[in-house]
Image 1: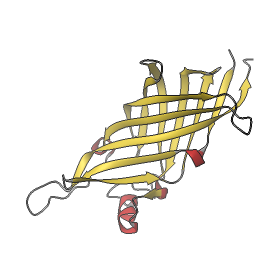
Image 2 (image 1 turned 45 degrees about the vertical axis):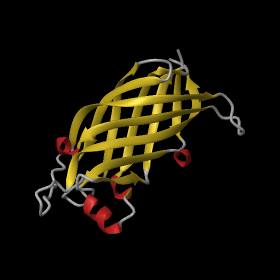
Image 3 (image 1 turned 180 degrees about the vertical axis):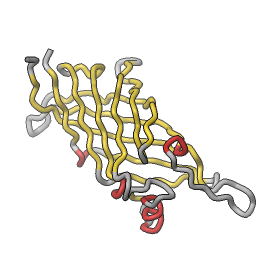
Image 4 (image 1 turned 60 degrees about the horizontal axis):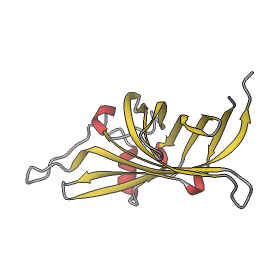
Length: 183
């Protein structure tokens, strides 16, 4: 079967995260620069192989001081580890639109197996420009300490200032590229 390549439409995609702050609220952020590619057998999304990278210097929490701290060695160490990456190993179909995506997430030189939830939004065969598009919503949770992000502070009352769990949420739209026939 032919291999189909899908390129990210970054203008219709976003990658964000949330972390507990002082146990009373969440701080949200996003990556402004990222890329992803998908390869499938024909248009069968259950065969998808996903490769994703995010430029850590593009992190934004709408606070320059906090963004600078997140890029420092206390957190991402963006100077020495400029990207985080995810490489899928298996896409497990749960039902018509829900999948479990298994793969390896790498940050700060630490690689760990993760499973993410994927909702397949479907395929539009022909948009107004004649292109075929596919959409996905991805969510999941990781523990930042698994990747060597151990920074923490305790408040005056003994409460934790920053949670360990990081909730990931992404929306991604892909454009179908030319199919490649096997040799």
